[in-house]
Image 1 (tube, rainbow, N blue to C red):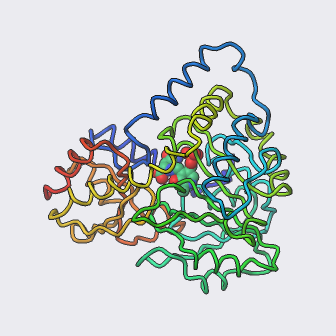
Image 2 (tube, rainbow, N blue to C red):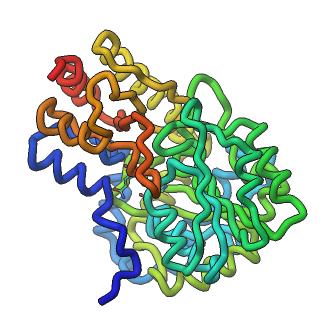
Length: 385
Ligand code: PMP
Ligand code: GLN
């Protein structure tokens, strides 16, 4: 069989997790917490697992009560924008991954160009290509990973269909300011361009900065698919529940595809999430995440101080970038392998986020870990090989 993605191997996250398992390295590579979802959420899932009547197909767009709870929360947390309509503007998906896939499958036609800002989450480019689309990669400056909007504008052609953005950004943690959203809005205004805004780390914005969504900008709200993930928000990456917010006409197109990709998301997990959202009308959980993860960021940086690591600033998300060139000149993939095998810590080489393997001299640590894990990792990282 001739491969549709001949240049694509096993994802770097799977590779590095396997390497960590084989070598006994502490896994700071793949992005997932080593703690569990809140007890109330696990209890809710247990309740629905034991109950009769929540084990058959959910409605295709998601359980109405979960869509209502999401609409209410988004309305409260983003008061500048009208709350999304639960019936016509919210679709539950099998993680953010399925939302991204289904949106791209719904809107990208063969030959359409999609602008992707690199470093980019690994599925963006291959998923565009699977639709016959053509990724147009624009490199983010490796200083602060905030877009050079003139460079983005220069990449737009008459074939451009969609611009993908991701704030807070994986892997850099960069967060769009109001001026970035304004620049994106002026770029797409009065054009047919659509926006796919990957906001899975939406609540993880640090240092007192208010999170901003594409939805808060009227010109963007009208043409954006906004994707989020309960995996990130509730420390439940294994549940694979996410959602997409989009205006009714865009949602209708997304649902045409979603119904054939998964049809619907698992029913008991949706009930459990609805329970915890309904029980938290002040959004205490979502609002607690910034300080929770900021403390982890600061703890990890503090533990690495004095070990010779040069850490990049982390305005958001749950990843720390660090330069490695003072330790190795063999490239980031070779260094990541050496780090796992000889130092005992697994990381992700940032070249995996570039379609051409560009090596920015950086590796990525995930700090969504218990204090004991961060301490054990730091002990290894502070001991030169
Ligand atoms: N987008 C980004 C930027 C991510 O970091 C991730 C998770 N690592 C996803 C999408 C996928 O989210 P999910 O696990 O909900 O499918
Ligand atoms: N999003 C996670 C990361 O960036 C990985 C998810 C996955 O393994 N597919 O590490």
